Structures are given as structure tokens and as C-alpha cells.
Image (cartoon, rainbow over the protein chains, first blue to last red):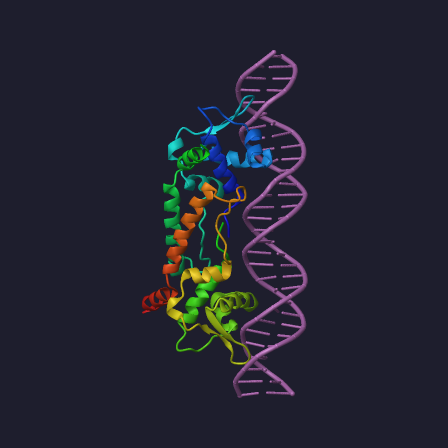
Length: 133
Length: 133
DNA sequence: TACATTACAGACATTAAGAGTCCTTAATAT
DNA sequence: ATATTAAGGACTCTTAATGTCTGTAATGTA
């Protein structure tokens, strides 16, 4: 029971893009090198992030990816949602509705998601910068 | 990304055992029927619960399983721990230590686990009884 | 216009984990 | 002694994650 590697890559990639100066974009090639993984694979992840509206892509020469304009609103939960889809940690396959056990599990998950929604990636990016100095 | 079916079965089984009157024990056969799954498979799950000290097993004729004496202390987290093992939802495979992203994820997970530790199965069992009336 | 660059999409292969079965062994009551 | 029941190991099957490969479309540059 673990979040996928894709989610980890996605979170790190988002921070990289946030640290990019101005609105310059980065290509998959560059982003893949930074994280030591294949460009084709990272491409899949980036496409998901783009479809979720978290980043913007421009094809063609001198193209690439850059962070979306709502930079300061993007949360951990947004990224997780983009890569993992809208799934629940727990599904009671036995009862069809009103399972008491499921209720408890769902509530706990909701609270965790609420916390991850309140954590913004921009904070991580800023923290990374000050750490570097 | 989902908790395993085994965890779901385990939680339900624990409640069934708690609803058992006195300290009478139930066999796998009986427990399996109640949840429409194969005895051999449920047996694996029960063994995990026994090893975790959540239930007690007695082999041989007239044997079976019964809830452990610390009935009122058993939490959701205890059961999850027994079936899922001591795993984390998130591991940053890139950085070896001090990953800012991992820190946030881990914190959120810890809070969720704390909540699941505060939720006791006995409450669910009691609630199930009063609902039945 | 031609060409190089880059994102996008689909099909495919590989791996890992979950889910479940089968068979044997050990323990216990009658 | 025998029937009953839990425990354990080896095994299969299915599903999802993880990636790769190939081709196509879009864009800038010369």
C-alpha cells in the first residue's frame, strides 16, 4: 500500500518547474536528467499534470513545460489527484452502503486529504531555495 | 492505491468476533461463510491477526479463534498494521534523507494513523448492535 | 518550404504485488 | 485411534505499476 513512484516524480517535477525563473519552460529531456529517469516515462506523467491544468505544455521546437499561472494555489493534493486519479484508500466491497467500518476509514482519509490540500508546493519551493543559501 | 481486501476482511472479522458472546470461539468455516469467502484464504488473514496478538487461536477439534482479552483497546490501526505490515504511504526513492516533500507526506500520514489509532473496533461492534435493534 | 525539435498517443513488454488455491503437517478433543 | 481444526509452504492467477518503443502532430528556424 503505497503511493506510486509516478506521484513522487510528479511532486518533484512540479517543484523543479516552480524554481524555474520567469515563465521559461523546460523540456522533458532536461527534467528527466535531473531525476535520473527516462524521458519517455516522465513524459507520461507530465501529460497527466498538463491535463489536470497544473502545468502548460507547448509542442514543437523550443517547446516544453512550464508551471501554470495559478502557481501559488497548487497543493500536494492537486498533484496526487492528477497522478493517482480520484481513488479512495478504502472500499468495503462487502456492504453496498452504510458500512460502519468504511465510514471510519473514509473519514480518516478525508482528514488526511484536507491536510494535503492545505500544503502548497510553493512553500516547498521557497524552503528549498532558502536551504540552498 | 488502496488498502488490500485482506484489511477489509480482517476488520469485519474482528467485529464478528467481538460480537461473539462470552469467550466462545469461532472456526474459520463459520467466519468464512459469513463473508462469502474461502476458508483457506481467510485462514491466512486470521493467522496474521493472531500473530499480532489481536486474536487467540486454539488448534485441534473444537478449536477456533476468539478475540484477545484486550478487547476494548483494539484500534483500527492495530488491525491495519497486522495485515498491511509496517509500511509508509510514501517513500521518496530519490533523496536519501531530509526530503522536504517526503516530510509533508509523512506528517499527513502520521495524523491519519493517529486518528485510526483513536478509533476502537469495540465502538463499531456496539454501534452495530444498537442498529440491529 | 524543408528540417530539426519537441510534445502527444497508442501499443506493447516487464515486473511486482495482491488474491486466492492446494496440500501437508501439527495440535487437540472425544 | 480418529475426526477436527489451525498453521505453513508452495504454487497459480490476476491486476496494476512501471516502463519502452514507435509513430504522429505541432512549432520554430533557416
